[in-house]
Image (tube, rainbow, N blue to C red; front, side, top):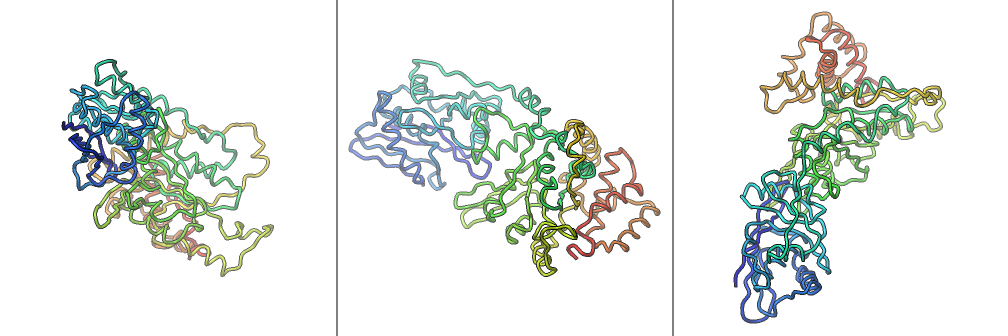
Length: 512
């Protein structure tokens, strides 16, 4: 007897439906075809034990299973439940008349309990697209899949529940999530809050400007000055994600199995902080079975690179194209996958290998040659994509011991959101530009026009401070954001002068 059951394979951040055809015939043997990997080939042992421990058995006949389309590589253990139910239905151990109306996925333990799977959200989206009545999957992933409306989602703990459901001996409880309610509850409770930061008012201001315009930022300062602490709090002042952004972000994290159990939609913007020993593939994505990298996991959020010069130079260089295009394309001989990667880059670094620069009381000093070698790890083209450079100084004791709490992230976020709303309106006719950091030369000329006095101020500053040519456009972009925070129509001299302060690495004596 031939039975068809449906599962799904995740490729990139999209899912493809897989038809599992199970045929039982005279003879003996277990034949699994359709490009399965080792994890799927081993499933026969898990299925046999799970069925036996729940009062069923693998039929002692010739079992042929085809996973169509047969030319698409299938991987992972999430097909265990699909295969097990196909075998039970084909051997008439269960009725299974409605089995083709459901998409079924789950990894089996030997006692029949189900383990969580990856990619539940993209699979659920595909199931709805293809007109399936429902999606049966492990309980731990049910909330994640239930985000998708117009699809019945059933979270189960054991294979026996599914067998009884198709045998019409029991019912399954549908998982229903109020997506909007869950999403908005999580918004006003950030884990890290700017209210915890003592002193550093100028750096907070700088962070606010970076968040308002979506500008990449680099913090330069000695050890212990608070670079990491400030960076971790940046996501809390970014504008709240839209439902569409939250769905995109959850989808990527779902593919790599990073969505927490029993969590529906991710409401907080992601913050990723990879170690400096990271490889190219781990950062941008790829591998023999393609997976999103750190830059895609930080999509719609923040990618924090601590101690930037410690990263391998070739690793930093592969970020140049994703920073520009807001997506990364992984091309291999047999496939091409595109992952979204629209993130804010926040980097930090010590000003010298020893950590202290131009500090007479410093315990460690570095020679000019060591300094040059250390700073040359950051290439000009990469620095070109970082709009704001700011020096962070250690907080004095009297500020550290203050009882007064600083301004909260929620308050700062209101101003940031106000500025972002102005930018959204400004760029509404442009498809790929949503905030100031994304402006090209054409938009800079149009939206960052200067009065004569402001132009003179910028000219004088560039000559006196020996600012490089690359600093010119960056200063204009940042000053446009400062003007937006104030709700000003045009860029004034004080906006320009503040933006000039945020280009410290372009001055002579730093990176040349």
